[in-house]
Length: 515
Image (tube, rainbow, N blue to C red; front, top):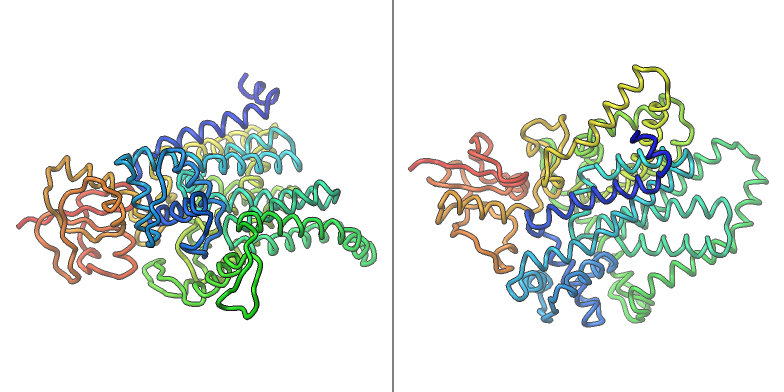
């Protein structure tokens, strides 16, 4: 009965799945406090809205920041022009002593990004396999814990996912028929992807080149027809470039001025300064932790490991099934995800699955098509097996609610902090829950290895604490350790062998030592 209704109304079924995911995300807003990066993004976005400038920090483009700050502005917060970006962000969140209210609105403004990404998954799957396959793909996509986790934050990663995926799908429609309208739309989506995060400048060209290579391998055309195809698309490509320039220029208010790294004035100098800042950051590296090892310049296998332990196993198995079933339609979405994963492996900033979040649109399309193909198979054993996998996928993150951000699959075991840290587990999101737990325990003072001091700066109630000293001996009484600063620095050393009394969310370990 249910399957018949889905067949009759696939668009409605997909919309219901997205609605359920949205409700799950909204349910986390009042439980998880702001992460480390959210105040900075909100400050920069509010400066753009109220001040008409973009000077706080240009390493991230403005799109997602402005979207989140719009929600905060509607909540009543106002820019105070504090010269420190983070302090400004804390003031915005704590504005009028309504921290939870302000954070709720800033995060709610990001929900349309989940809707856009889900629509891309549905349309992409429907385009190559059918509407029912699209519904299954949306079911898979909207139950991926890292997607649910990052869609619930006022950060840049879900914007990158939505618009990089939208640009890839727009490219497929454009390649089919490069009309003026499709050329402009393709250019606009590319511009929005770049305005989401500068990594789109690497991800999109790489993915599109690999997709085109797969297409050529399937068709095996001769040289002259390929050359004719390329030349016929030169003018449409120029239209797309104009659209890209217009979208980016509008976001940076069509400014014109000097740049510290270029001798001549540039249009939208903050845009080019941001690209340069990301380049410098990548050269300098970033402290990272993986499988018990600390590095400044990353691990070439980092994203392979985090994908293996942060992705539900059912999704991985369904994706692997697609090539074994020789489903030709999955080659392009798989190429999209693979190209992003490959390019990311050369980076020196290894701080979370969030940096390659767009791979999940490609994987969801592949897994959705494979699952739908097997569901239509009349062999009972196959049908039961795929129903088990789809059901496993659907409930994979439910037991971890609301800790989608810190989710790891069964491969990570009971102590995932021995494998991962940073935004994969601890992005400072559990300070509110720690405060509530310590109040329940009637703890007036404790020792803390702190990560998110901004929770206190935003004006929230918190028990008294003293900084945790380095060394091999803990202080008597209650001790709390945020996983990220502990794993990145290796201090305190006693935490390697001590057993925590309990875990707060997915990111803080709580210990008690008698006098």
